[in-house]
Amino acid sequence: MSKVPSLTLNNGVAMPQLGFGVWQVPDDEAAKAVGAALEAGYRSIDTAAIYENEEGTGRAVAASGIAREELFITTKLWNGSSVTWTRDAVLREFDASLKKLGLDHVDLYLIHWPRAMREDYLTIWKTFTEIEQSGRAKAVGVSNFKAPQLSRVIEESGVVPAVNQVELHPQLQQAELRAFHAEHGIRTEAWSPLGQGKGLLEVPTVVAIAQKHGRTPAQVVLRWHLQTGNVVIPKSVTPSRIAENFDVFGFELDDEDMLAMAALDEGKRLGPDPDGFDWN
Ligand code: NAD
Image 1 (cartoon, rainbow, N blue to C red):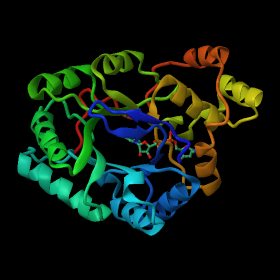
Image 2: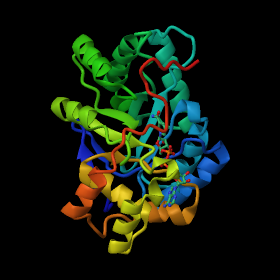
Image 3: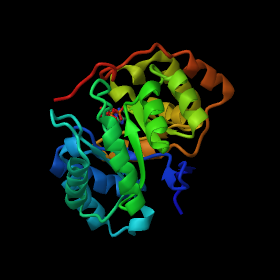
């Protein structure tokens, strides 16, 4: 049995709280990295159409021989072209992702960005709910949405996204958005959970807590996410780090550590602010 705890989504589906992300990993390398992650014990993988590594991810999944029901595979619709999204276009993209992954269903399908100024996320969302009903995605959710867009999709469709995957790490703790999620039964999934390895892992507070527990700064940050209630999907292509990032269930941060981590919030984004942000 996996040592990774699961969180129950608002439709009853169980999602591992720790998964493995593959952004910016070329297809062949992704196949190796996902293979190493599955070997290390991860069962949840986060890819996306725009990462162009769904095929490599799918190859690693197939080669692992792990039973499909033990795995939790997430991919995302790249809704960043200048296309005005229709139901047919969404279904076509979804089919293409399934084909590349070599799967007959995914566990979670996400709208990658709201592109809030275009408002076609509403059409996309309605099609997503249809995909969920068909069983080809066990759950559907969104990414990079803020409260106003979440409210709109809930009001217009009556279906609450299972997950909102957003940039979140100790230097961008997203307290307000997390409170909104909690109020509506949306799970918070943290992207760039390690702050992309840029600076966060050298912050003296993080280093000191790591020394106190005889752990690494990355493990401390991942523990903080788990104890905060986030789903977390760190990325690495280095097998030793892949294993290190999974080895976070043998210790706990105490109240003093959690308070010190809370003080690191500085609203620091590494990625774009979704407001006004349009991908083409
Ligand atoms: P991350 O915070 O997981 O950091 C990854 C980087 O941290 C690595 O490239 C490496 O340099 C370093 N690192 C990893 N493990 C380490 C360790 N143990 N010790 C020291 N350094 C270590 O960054 P990320 O890849 O941006 O985010 C994780 C995943 O989130 C992505 O792979 C992707 O799946 C997802 N994501 C989603 C979106 C979105 O718009 N939905 C955007 C960005 C990322």
